[in-house]
Amino acid sequence: MTNLQQQIEMCAQYAQKWKGLSISSSGLEEQKKAAERAYFWLELQAAFTFLWAVEQTQGKDPEVKKKLIVAKTNLTKKLVDYADKVWKEMRLG
Image 1 (cartoon, one colour):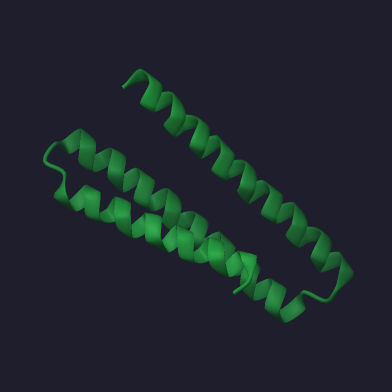
Image 2 (cartoon, rainbow, N blue to C red; image 1 turned 180 degrees about the vertical axis):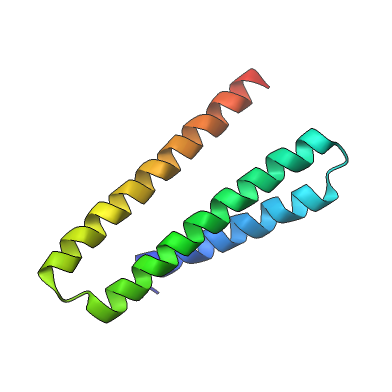
């Protein structure tokens, strides 16, 4: 399993987790927060799936490799921003 495949799987697991929490939450605010997090993970899963498909079909092209690295870096930054947001929420909550 490649790194991208692992990231796709991780995103799918977290999306399912947050979807379940959204459905089972009793408060509207809790449901909204969980649904937003599920959407974040679904969006990230779609992006990683797209990168994996590009890597499989055009990954040998040096120019494509460079663009893939930039895209992976941007997605990693998005994950870091998400982790920072969750960390701040935990400290305040």
